[in-house]
Image 1 (cartoon, rainbow, N blue to C red):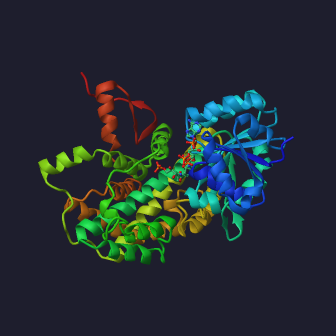
Image 2 (cartoon, helix red, strand yellow):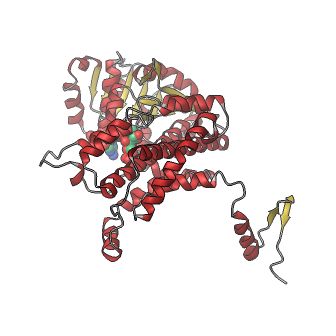
Image 3 (cartoon, rainbow, N blue to C red):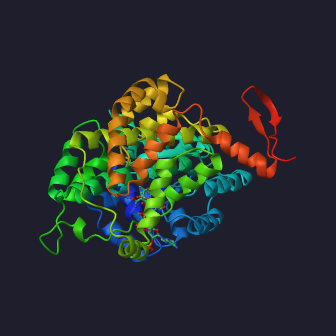
Length: 466
Ligand SMILES: NC(=O)C1=CN([C@@H]2O[C@H](COP(=O)(O)OP(=O)(O)OC[C@H]3O[C@@H](n4cnc5c(N)ncnc54)[C@H](OP(=O)(O)O)[C@@H]3O)[C@@H](O)[C@H]2O)C=CC1
Ligand SMILES: O=C(CO)[C@H](O)[C@H](O)COP(=O)(O)O
C-alpha cells in the first residue's frame, strides 16, 4: 500500500515547482514524468525535500505509491495529452480516486471531462493555477472547479501551498465543471491586456520620447510604488533594466518583437464572442500578439508606407501613469463583466468578490488595485467601472488616457489596447448610440424588424419597398 499523500505527473516548469511546494508544506508526493531521467534528476536535486518525494517510472508505480483514496495532479500541456493521461490512469485507479487537471485547460474540455467522470461516478477537478514558476514554488493563486466534495478533500493541501494575502489563502472553489479553468482563462485574458497596455506605454517612451531603457526601467519602478503597484509593472522595470549577457547593451534591444502565446488569451476572446460579452481591450491584446507574429508583413508595410512610430511630444509621466490606471480599470471591468455573464449562462454562481481576492497574491495579475476591486464587487452588483470608487478614479484618469491615445495615434503609434479602452469607455457611456442605423440596414436588406422607441414590444418594419 502506497504512503504518499498525493501524486503529480509532469515535472516541467510548473509541476516540479508545485511538487517542491507541496513537499515544503509537509505533503509527501509521488512524482512521475514521461522522461524518466527528469524524474530522478528532480528528486536527486530536491535536497532536504527529497525525503518527501517518491520517484516513479510508470503510471502503475505512481498510482501504487499513493495512499488511497488517491489524488493525482496532472501538470502537462493542454489538449490530447490530458485526455491520454486520464484514459491511462482511470483503469489503474479506484472509484473514489481523484484526478486533478492543474494545467491551463480549455474550460470546454474540462466540462467534457468532468461530465464523463460524473457519468462514471468518479471525482474530477479542473483547477487553474497562476503565478509562473516562482508562484508554483512559493505560493500560487488557485482557482478550483469541478466536484465540490472532491475540492473539499484536497483543499487542505491546496490552501497550504497557495499564496497568502494577509494570511488568507488564495485558493478558492469557483464552481462546478469548468468554472475554475474559465476563471483562469479570464485571468489570462486580463494578463494579456495588462501586458499589452504596458508594452504600448513602453513603446511611446522608447520610440516617441526616445527614452533610454534605464530611464524607462526607473519610471516603471517608480510607478510600482504607487496606484499601479503590481507584479507586471514590477517585472516590466526589471525587464527594461536587464543587460544583454552577450554584450553591454540592454537585453530588450536584442529580443525579437514577436510574442508567443499558448492559447489562453485566445480562448478568452473566443468565449467572449460566444457570450456576447464585450472585452475589446483583451481582444486587442490577442490581436496585437497575432500581428506581432507577422514580422515579414510588418517589415513590408514599413518599406511601403514608412515607419509608423515617430518621435513626438509624449505626454508627461504623470499623464502616462493615469492613462495606464484608466486602461487597467477598464480591462478588469470587462473581465469581471465577462465572468458575470458566464456565471449566468452556465449557472455557476461565480463569486466575483472572491475571484478578486484570489487574484490579490500569487498570480501574474496580482496588484494593489485588486483589494479595492474586491470591496467594490462586494458592495455593489453593478459593473466595476460604474461602482463608486472606480467610477471616480475613471473620471479622473480618462482625460489622460484620451490625451495619450489621441497624440499617439496622430504620431502614427500603434496603441490598440489603450485605444480599445477609450472606445469602450465612450461606447459604454453613450445611452443613444448608432445601432439604429444597423437595425435600419438589417431591416432594409433582410426584413429583420426593429423595435421602436415609442412602441418597443413588437417588431416593426420600414417603408423600404413599394
Ligand atoms: N509556465 C507557466 O508559467 C504556467 C504554465 N501553466 C500550465 O501548466 C501546464 C504545464 O506547463 P509547464 O510546466 O510550463 O510546461 P513544461 O513545458 O515546462 O513541461 C511540460 C511537462 O509535460 C510533460 N509532457 C509534455 N508533453 C507530454 C506528452 N506528450 N506526454 C507526457 N508528458 C508530456 C513534459 O514531460 P517531458 O519532461 O517528458 O518533456 C513536462 O513534464 C500547462 O498546461 C501550462 O499551460 C499554468 C500556469 C503557468
Ligand atoms: O498561465 C500562465 C500565466 O498565468 C502561463 O504563463 C501562460 O503560458 C501564459 O500564457 P501565454 O503563454 O499565452 O503568454
